[in-house]
Length: 329
Image (cartoon, rainbow, N blue to C red; front, side, top):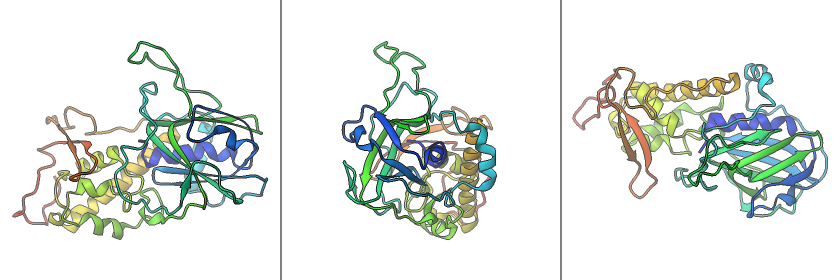
């Protein structure tokens, strides 16, 4: 599923429609009736980790956009990209089912109740969770880039299409949408792209006995962090994915958190600049030094197993007898 930087980009694409009324709807969603959006006003949009939240009200209201999670420097650099689509994967036509089976277990800090129809109160919050190739397109639809497994050149079908009073429209692809009866409540301390991200909390979680690759995907402490960021941060910190955090000294754990933050921020900036994020280990056969890369599905016992890439030479696995102060190569 799209990671934090991608969902932040989706949030940016949706934001210009805040304050407009839905005048026409469409889409293939059966669980969430597209006609339930008819005549509603989009009043707010929020992002936390891998989830996007949209607030719809039956009446027009004055909306303040002062709580946008995007920093001012980023806003200035994003103007040229407002009307363009975003696509997380290069092969949009190879879309996965609309669920979130790839989401690691664990609470990501959000506290709200769900349902399949709009709430009866004044606020109607829609939670959007994107599938593996989930995306949002603005004022255009996704097109097939190659034939599917059956040989058909069929364009992806949007789950939801919302036409607004300002003449533009949004098309949501491969996502799971749920109405909420209350506004989202979350702590930005766990969001890796938030200015309030709590490094101390993250370091404490990483210092446990379990492998660090499990902890990194725990959305309670690293909301928005996904498999790509996990692989890249571990490689750049020189840490084997199965190394127990308790065997790593504080300097190495701090370096790992630094790489998580730096890679995520660079990825987000690249999305607004229209550049593709460069990866050093993810889906590679060799590391930058030319060493063979190992690929294996790793995950907690009984939990979801995620494909993980690492270099045995650049990321040696620690044994219980090694000193904690070993520095990354």
